[in-house]
Length: 338
Image (cartoon, rainbow, N blue to C red):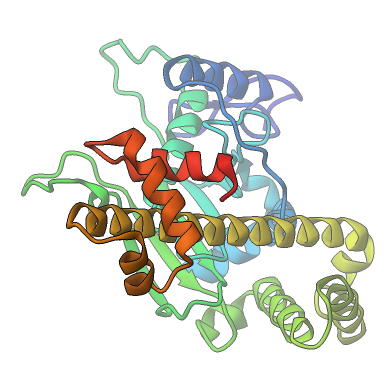
């Protein structure tokens, strides 16, 4: 590698990094360039356990070797490319690095997200922009770049296959026979009972799976914060990520509580959205029955709703004839606190 802080050209490829990976300066320059095109980010990002673990080059190399049947032994061969400082479109990726001639992107997901190919397209665009910042992409010489590999480690509660692929073209509104742009993401289910051969080759990945499984087991018995404390205690006692959990216990607690609060917030938003949808549908039904000549009492009886509620909907809906925009009627009803 080069002296600290100097750019170095990677073997066989026309990309530039410093001795820590993509330099902060290059990443920020490329991100700012992309932000000028695509707009400012608007989402906060929080680290999680998987990302913390694989920030360790030894562990990242262990997982890579387990997946690919390789036997790299020098962690310094990894050139870290994780988007640490440049937040692109409100997102950071989990872990990425160059090894040999490959640019490897690892993501952990606890939900089945069909947009991972699109997200990875954003990530790899930002990385390649940074890696080639000091090259002449308008010149006649071919600029060689590492081959991207996209991996998602899935450990959610929804049952999914052991392995499957996602394709960017699945999102195309209309897919032609000759696809010009494709990106494939390999999804590996790392829940207990899946991909056992991979788990045997990677002790850290196996212990991460066991840690998540232990947390979920205690969640069935205790409130979330107490479940986390119990799970961490048991894992330390039984040698599951014990060194990591001893060292990072407080941070792990904060991260999991943050994720738990986020999940609760999302669920509440879903419930609110569902309730809003039901109310707008009720308004649509009331308007239809009213336009068919039904009285307030008849509508209330048909829909099994209080007469006063139906009366208020009928009165306000008159202000929005003839279109009867259910959303606007609902908003006025909310403001009037019927």
